[in-house]
Image (cartoon, rainbow, N blue to C red):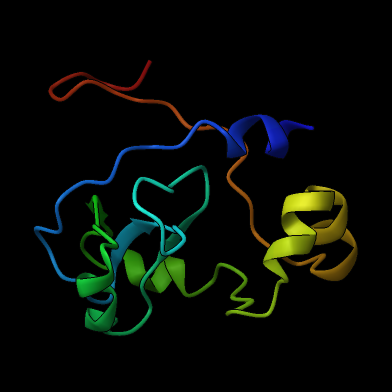
Length: 115
């Protein structure tokens, strides 16, 4: 239900200002314009081919953070996107029990300490 609700709340495309290099964080999208939703990925390798398809990185893993990222369960391209759309976490929990998830995020204004 949550996935279905957010699927319709798309995010407008941003211009591609950085390349999809290792450590850059990007929203997943379809081939359609303005199709980003809540799915993110961190580039493990140079994915510059995604640049011309409109995948605009918006963040970067800094310092030695990629050593931490590499500890996150990497399922690659294996999950079935249709099953994720229809079944959500039930599908992921059953088929990818080791999958890492973001369960909470906090936006901290620049120059402020965490709350």
